[in-house]
Length: 307
Image 1 (cartoon, one colour):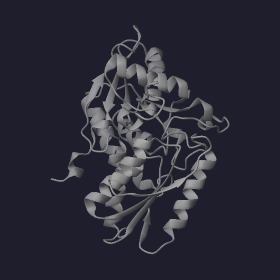
Image 2 (cartoon, rainbow, N blue to C red):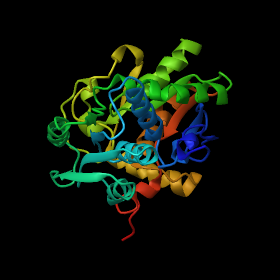
Image 3 (cartoon, rainbow, N blue to C red):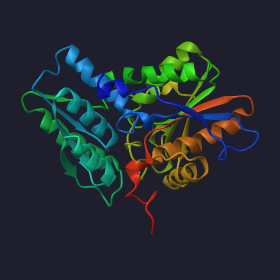
């Protein structure tokens, strides 16, 4: 057994107080139960192990990636467990906890300055370019998560867990889009089991590019990169729901105080959208969403900071 064996097999709970009467049931998968407190542990383990199997990553190599924090923390965990050096390109736009967590696990951080702490298209492209230049160095494996198809099967086990834990009664899956890998990975499994399952994507209302709107700055960390991600597949999605940063943060606080669920901002966005779908589907239906990561990653931000 190693720390990597603790990834996945997370709990699922039913939301209570935030769900309106007359709506479908909403079940939330507690992805913070994985070792770094994030669903990204699943993907990180898969992309590293696939690269090892086909020789793209060999002992003594360095792993490089751009990330808002959760992916970088998960990659740092896997690299620490397996003995790889890891270099992370990130930014001051992301929480201090995420940066410190990556560094604690041995990641070497390069910070790209943001525009007032906001996630923007320019910031993401600047981070990608810095990582690309690093990847040209010898013995370096660049994860390149926005382009890496290995990220999608990293979430197939999550889809199987959802199917099993709901006993096949799921009617809709609601989840926010960053790279789109987790949405696609889960959707592929659920659609194979039950083609009628609705798949609903969530994105920041301030940067609703998936719906054809303009890119804009927002503060829902880890999602809404400001352009249509290369792994996005509109064919698997039934609808796209925009959620504002304010509504996502407000819901994150409500989840903590009313449900005892201490989650990050994208989890708040997931629940805001899930409530809309639950109202649309009505009693007797089952909606599943994800608690993407732990609120412990956001204590220094205005989501939870006191005063």
